Length: 548
Image 1 (tube, rainbow, N blue to C red):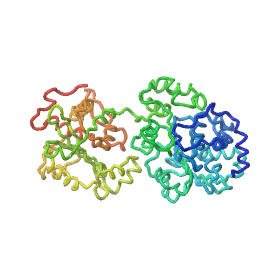
Image 2: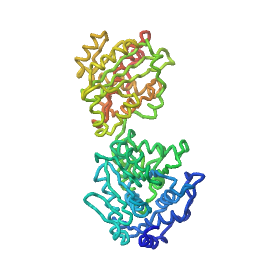
Image 3: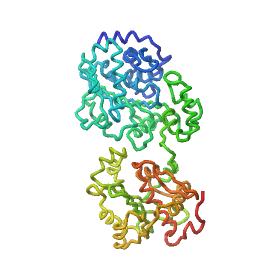
């Protein structure tokens, strides 16, 4: 039986504004039922709580229609055995829509109102400060609800709530907590999933930790991010696949409010579509002011799109249009390239960093493409540190075979030399271009192995022609790269610097955004274009340099 005092507290709020008409979600399974009394209870529990901030502080937590729909769908749709159909809810929504309050209310419902003995509910975020935001809202909600205040113990120092009638707890966790095993999870509320530095906390909390519970719930709530190599992007893609009917998972409940890629970001109708609480939790004037600021300052456009329209955008304008790059993911068959003429580009960067070696095979005829075959190495010992620090999937890429590791904490150049020597037995490597500043010893060793090595300047003069050529070949789909994920990530990291003469070269915005593979590709492409396959003349000779 539910705690009676609490239920009465909830009951008083039951008559507050409801959805005009509730229809169960299209993701309800055929054998599931919508149990109105269970859904009513969940809604009533939340509406017995109070708002804690701003002009709404102290007023009853009236669920806005979109919020109520989520609560009814998640808590009211039950399987034939009487337990919840959905164990994961993914809610992606712009900022200032009442996200933290909804997350706190769900956390309290799971802890205090779900009739679960010794429930363990965890609030997760990227760091302790972020995780504390939802906790502090939940703690204030407890203080403001008399029925909860006398039943819940608040431990501010450890960020823990204890619901005494059932011995249930709500505890804050962050990605920087070292030991995250041994949980018997009833509920997890992930706030701002897009800020998770890696997938470790997510995996620990969602895979297996709730196995001993009958209906654990993973409630994921976030705004859009800007990192497409993240756990949030992965879940976002799954949500889209389910929404668009490409995948079916009856345990997963997706909600995405945001503007589509093709939508006009300047149109107020688009703002309304993306912001379901517009005019309630945030005024139209506020959004309009943010838009005006973004329109006058292009640097703010992406921030407006991400935070106000919930679009996944990079923080600054990238050079390579990734849909064009992805269109060149033609299959690359290493076996069919055996014996073919090719050119190498070598970017060593520093000894603790990624080393990239890229082979480019010039086309055999008019219908053929420039084929790109990249290889990457990283020191074995610092891979976990880099995953945590850079928020990049090096560990996943290693497992998938796209990234090789060398023993120790620095790149083992001897290992790479042997690898290139081996490649030289399979392919006709005419030349290897290298950055003349970093590779003196290694290039000498490669020369001793019989390779022709050519120094390649990293300034505008040398880099500009092949960089422009790379873009042209990509737009014309005259390049084949097999969709290599590391090379894709590096291409997406490229910014362009321009000199007064209009020459360009690849650059990056942040130290964690590597472009080594892109630079190695550009160097190898330059040699492939200049020297060709032995029979063809240089594109540069035929047509002159590209100026744009």
